[in-house]
Length: 539
Image (cartoon, rainbow, N blue to C red; front, side, top):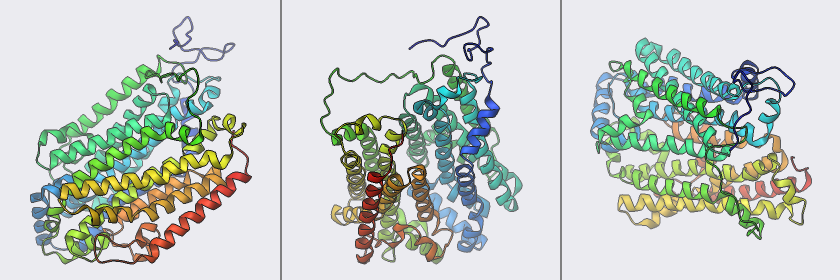
């Protein structure tokens, strides 16, 4: 790794004939550029994350309308280790306390994901595509891109905090402010994690993967700690810190200092590393390939590029199935005799026995998350195009369809694999015959493939809009996760392809939508490939 060029004053140099640029020179311009590029995604992330929590009071008030009902529900949920692992403990049975319990963990994860996407997009991704090198030819300081990315993430998380605080102020100003700051602070912790990963790795995909793994590890640690296995594990997780701020339950303001310290420490480390490397370089160098290539087909190349991602998702889904399968036995304790709460679970998972409904809910959530893998896998060749790596391949005898087919095989086949592993994990942990649960898991594939087909269509026919496929997958995840709790009309839930699938395991055998969605997915893929054949390659 070469060291950065420096002037006699020790400041990173600007253009050869220009004046020295300070480390933060150009931060304002880069921040405005980042906010302009994300002028749609940043407001959307903030509204979805903050609005999810702010609207929770109204939905829960309809379910637990009296103080006695809230106290009974809080006692039942606190006594249920499965529910503590999924959502965390209930610290207070007020309406605000129940909102913090029901929506706080999921909102913290959303804030973390939004933050890592924004930071990696404006740091490592800019370097990987070569845009940062062109920008740095001007008067741009070495740490300006990193600062701009963190400021863009700060805008997202500040907006989330303001929306939550304003939306829940009626339940108690102190509790609303504490919850807003906890969620925004958690987002900034993982924004700093992403900034650090962007310095260590050479690819945006790996930086996102490492930060995403950190988010997943934080969730698992919190779940293990809250389930009662070892409470100290909760304090090893930033998501656990957010819940232990205890909004609406005698706020622990000092925990916010722990969140701030974690964000600042990681940011300081990222700044230190950013000043010690060249643009495009990294501290975790990639291994050089063999002198003579050993990949004879486009499919082998696609497998080489995506095998690590597929392995990570496979292990995660198997582990997730094992974890959530252990919660099934306690499903009936969630609601007790509360008919409205039972109705929410049944809307998410079907009208059969509550245990089957809970299983169906878990299976459906795995399906919606699997759609994120499928969309990312489909869009991998789009990244190869925009980085310029696809053009040399296609300049030879390799056809576009054959090139794309390898990636699509991994996207569609890989989604089937990870869903099968989640079903096996559920069945093993629950101790139930694997056949029905595995079948229920695989029944999610038509909806997953429909979203993957939409990604193929956008990439093939309108590559500039290909990233909109992420928005569609995120919308389906939000509708499936919070739609039933917010009592959204069925017409809204049906905007997601998952809303049309049979609720399995259970007596629901409506297979016509399964066939229709499968046919729709095939049509979308065909249309996308036809568009790929006709358009120019992005260089």
